[in-house]
Image 1 (tube, rainbow, N blue to C red):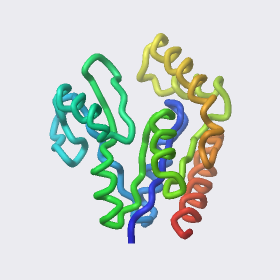
Image 2 (cartoon, rainbow, N blue to C red; image 1 turned 45 degrees about the vertical axis):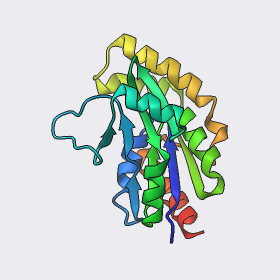
Image 3 (tube, rainbow, N blue to C red; image 1 turned 120 degrees about the vertical axis):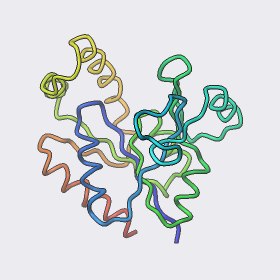
Length: 188
């Protein structure tokens, strides 16, 4: 039995990673999609575990060969992307593959897989609340926070392109709603 695909996208600070990490503990046979990157491994990262580590040249060659579901050049020669062959391998093994991607990547994966994939957009209750959360993290400069807010405003325009929108104004409620939506999709 082939697995299914679950795509999560959200502006930074919306709680997406926290919700995904909660879902991974729920015995739903969920496995992260292993992305590829052209950055070097950090610390104890291993090729094929955290990421597939490719040189920028190899990454570009695979882009040219249409081997990615989605990809992005975040900085010059610093690529991230999702390899079609890796996702297919996980699906054939019966794994339900979960993606944590930006909105453009989420839309591309959904377009490729259609009804085999469920796309979920985690939305903050407001831009003001998102700013409050990002400031509260105390991990970014004011300039970085404003850049994230501007990106979030753009990303929010894509929310309606997703199958489900979960507004995270209360984390526990959002976790429960995500679990309900994912279980219903997996049982179909």
